[in-house]
Length: 445
Ligand SMILES: Nc1nc2[nH]c(O)nc2c(=O)[nH]1
Image 1 (cartoon, rainbow, N blue to C red):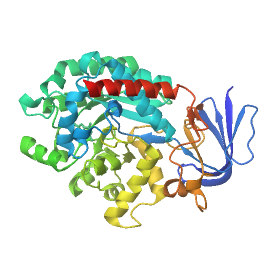
Image 2: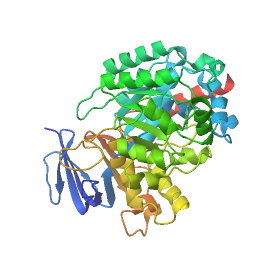
Image 3: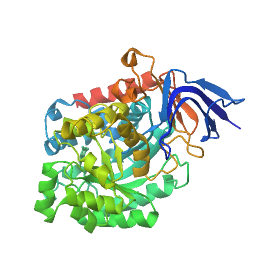
Image 4: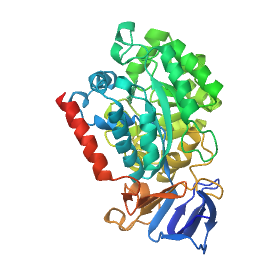
């Protein structure tokens, strides 16, 4: 029987039902799950000393476009709003193939893991040159991160009034057929699952009403979750009003895109009625504060969403609009941005951390993740608070106020995937070298 004891944490932030914070506590992990939490625990297995560390549940990333880690800081898209930014990047993404999707997924996910993330979703919505969803699934499996890839899609090209170039869109029948293929091949609905597939038409301005509706019917028939972009900025709202004659919330509701099996990225421009709709239907939101800042989209009404009871998780979004992919920094940014909008008591560091862990797990339908409690998956982050950035701090909230932005150790399903700040599963310098070679070739093309 495999056991690991994480011993003597300076503070253990459990995120359990009473949000217990335990000083000098231990966590006993057995067969990939949390077996016991308490003081003075022992094991005949491995011991990881956590003195001087804050221990938290692994962070959960609810929105990413991993492929974009090959297009960070592209000059033409550095200072544009969403639509112009996308139009500057589509032609570059058109040149991607399977190796680009595999490499960028490894870089993006490695970055996630080093910043404390144990569960990440991904929204892959373009498939040029023979690319397939499994290019990213294989990348995640090699790294050992828990993965929720979504089969994204675009079907309305420029000539039909959509935003993407015609060469990047797919036939709707092909999209639905491939959704079925990847769900049947890779989706594991069981507790402890390491891979759950979702269905994810890209955004109202790049797919038809029919595809939105059919994708929802398919997802519900298969029992998988649904994801898309919604109400990201004013351009997005104007498109909805001009093309569909309604606001995004009404559009989503009419096409079956509300419910506990749905989560929408961004939702910066949701109004009060739409927030109530999401709360009533338990529709989730992936809040992406850094990307919203970078693209000048605005400040999402997260305080109002949380107060109304909308499930909210955090997302780093793609690395073309972040341009980083550090989930710990994203949690800090979420806290800071609500304070800019609503004042210094609008969001505490503890609440931001809750959104980044338990909140994200709830949005992704993972009751088995996001907290350190007996019976839950042993997805655990160990943060060393002995560095210069935390020197002199008084409280575990320092993790977001004055904390390290990378983990010392990380466990996914009880397996140690980061040790002393290094990934144990891949040779990171080689991963970076391959990524830079691919990026250089794209630049030269
Ligand atoms: N932030 C982002 N918004 C988007 N909308 C859309 O259609 N694609 C994207 C994207 O890649 N990032």
